[in-house]
Amino acid sequence: MCIIFVVIYKAEMKKILLSLFIPFVAFAQWQPDVRLTNDTATSFYGFSNSRSLVAYGSFVHTVWCDSRDGNWEIYYKRSSDDGINWGQDIRLTVNQSISVKPSIVAINSTVHIVWTDSRNGNFEIYYKRSGDGGLTWGSDTRLTNNSTNSVEPSISVSGSVLHMVWRDFRDGSESEIYYKRSTNDGVTWQPDVRLTNNSALSANPSISVLGSFVHVTWWDYRNSPSGNAEIYYKRSSDGGLTWGQDFRLTNDPSASYTPCVMASNLYLHVVWVDNRTGPSGNFEIFYKRSTDFGLTWSQDTRLTNNSYYSDSPSLSASESFVHVAWWDTRDGNPEIYYKNSTDAGINWNQDSRLTNDSANSFYPSIFAVNSVLHVLWFDNRDENDEVYYKRNPTGNSIGIHIVGSEIPMWFSLYQNYPNPFNPSTKIKFALPTSSFTNLAIYDMLGREIETLVHEQLNAGTYEVDWDGDKFSSGVYYFQITAGDFTETKK
Image (tube, rainbow, N blue to C red; front, side, top):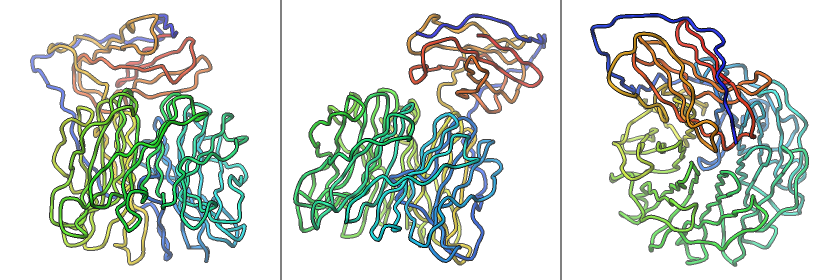
């Protein structure tokens, strides 16, 4: 139960008479490409279904592997202003082995990274964390320990509980999917848990966590060892302690690969690449969803439709918005494309081309937070592969609803309702003129824990939903800043 009491901290009331009504428009404007790496070596990262980019509040974190030091090492970079400006590259691994295919998550000021590393003679999974938003980093922690290879890690987080899946060869010539968790923010890790058990190959796991529900997808050859890969799903409803049965998501005579899963509110979304629709090699992007936490699933939805190759989808979901990015050869060379749904995956908008150059752009990683949409990919327009980034500052304007059609006469921040609430509440505010607006939630120590609005808004009265389910019960502050108007309630 969360309770918010009203306290006016500072309020500058302005009475402004307006004769012209300015409607609210959420402009979906993609900004220019930004080159994040700049060296003569190759820079790339892991699979699109294990995140190489994540954002929390106004902080954006990226991770990749780079051969600039003569061998492959893990590098990190961050932005503290929603991707507008970027800090320096930080080298996270220092050894003479191969360190590749990292995956990253962040919550509050804690950033967690896992990757594949050969320092032990075979490939093992390693882990590293930062407790100050990526400024400084702890030591490497070895998470797997066996005589065969452990590769393709994917990580997710809920509060202080970390969940990781990977592909492991310890059980024979074919790989299986394994799982591991930490319940104390990565300080210690519990034993490995084998999630799949069949004689065929299982690969490319993707994981997403929401509360106590842990969702895992992968592709599997059990139905046709000769090459008919299908997408499978498995879940835990008790935070990873116990697991349900494998559930087959695709069922057709073609190949289905590289699934990406993400949970958001009541919905569970999965995308993958599939060649059921055309001649051999004509892969397309497909999607399906569950509205009951993975118990039942919708029919498959085809997201791309052209005679060329579409591959490596990455997925991000935020309330009713679902975002998908992939690379596509319809333009003669691989380019990054994007598509979204604003009604939780029921209907989909047209494809948008995000890159436009004569070189190859591959393996996007997409992430939405607050109103901003972030995309990362690697690109060889500079003669070697480099990491590039692009943002849309209003591409994820979810949870912000305009209320009524009249222009307010002064700035206001209203009492939230309902109050007390569990787990969600609504916060309303009024803008008499177009203003860059920031609305954030703070804990009792004054630490910002979530940004609800951080964008330019037209004049009007707005309502924002805040879901406090992922935070502890207690008293919180919420503060709005719009132009030179500031007001805080607690």
